[in-house]
Amino acid sequence: MNNKFKDLFSKAALSTLLLASASALQTSHASVLLSGWDTSPSATSVYGQIAMPKNDDSSSRYFSFNEFTELNFDSGVNFFGNTYNGFYVNNNGNITFQSALSSFTPNPFPQSNQPMIAPYWADVDTRCSACGNVYLGASDANTMVFTWDSVGVYSNNASTTNTFQLVLIDRADEGAGNFDVQFRYEDINWTTGSASSGVPAQAGYDAGDGTNFFTLPGSRTSAVANLDEIFSNTSTPGIWSFEIREGALPGASPANPIMPVIDPSNPTNFHFEFEVIDPNTRIFIDPDVAIGYDYIVNSGPNFASVLLPTGFDDNLFDLWLWDSLVGDWFDASIEITGGIAYNFANAVDRFRILGIDISNMVDPTLPDVFIAGLTFDSTGSLNMDQIAITQFVNTGPGPDPVNAPGTLLILLTSGLLIFARKRKLH
Image (cartoon, rainbow, N blue to C red; front, side, top):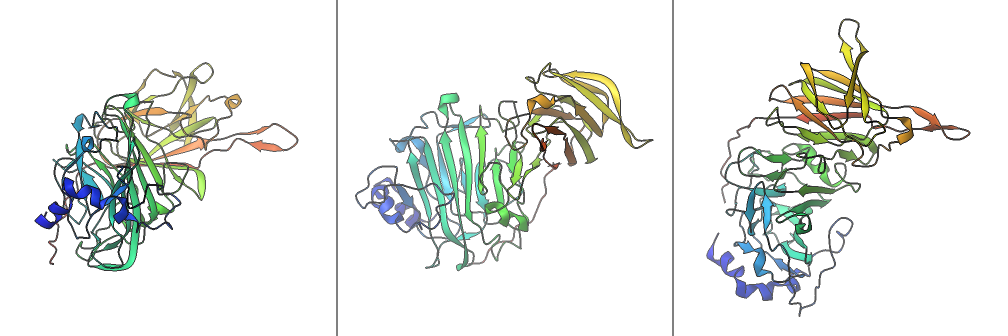
């Protein structure tokens, strides 16, 4: 970081850069962005915003949470077992906790020694006169907001711009250091800069321990441009939400499962992408179902066990297996009790669960309805379908369907892909 940039981010400069300098934040980006900060020239509250100077590949100085006296975050954030009391804002679409990051080409997660949260890690360039800025602010005492507003792409290119936010929400009410992460994508038009060898942006978060990370679907492919329109794990396209509890990823417990990606054009079709690091670690997912569902491995590790939820009638479910000779399911005459893990005698590449009573009227569009935990017989790249089993019921003069999601594609990948990074010439 150059001295000029350090000076601009000195404590003495914070008050002069407060939201008066952020009045250029465009109000047209209002549909998914958090907004409503004090924009008056006399604003002295941290609930305003600080504008980063226009730059390419630079970062802020280290900001500690406690210097923003009106913010909570008193216990910092617990990110995979490490507590961080501050952060660096990096122009290239991410924040880091241990050091500033100037890298403009997104290396595939996981990375070592660089814990980071990246709503859109790519080669952002804000030097162009038509480009917007990067802002740091807070909408209330519990919410820190980072906004990349109409930012251009390297080199000095504002012909297309991106607008997105990272939001950190203090959830110390559920435990010291607990917090939520939101990615809000208002307008994504470019995916890569001219010096990144065509590698598109990456979105997600990384513990920096070489093990724990999560990458959003489409990352490092052209599909990442759909984050503002198609992909979401909430009911609102363009808004992603994750709960970090006791430092752990979603999926570590039934109370915080991995939520499906929802395509707004087909809201009952759910999609999962996550990593299998340890085959013995149970991963909890929430595939909303009707009366049952099939799990089918297309390639990769097989199922070693399944843990079904409780709270459904007698908590008893029927296990069906696949007869490869006749190409059909058969009743294995095995009852699985919800809340008790069932271990397959031999790992299987598919199984069927039945027994969710129609009277439950499970609505497949609601989250947190039927959370199952899975383990596998090995590590590796897993491609898996989960297909809901549905049934029509009559509640009136006409047929009343119990809807169900379509095929649930769960794509699990592991291993580290190494890509050479090309130095950028300025």
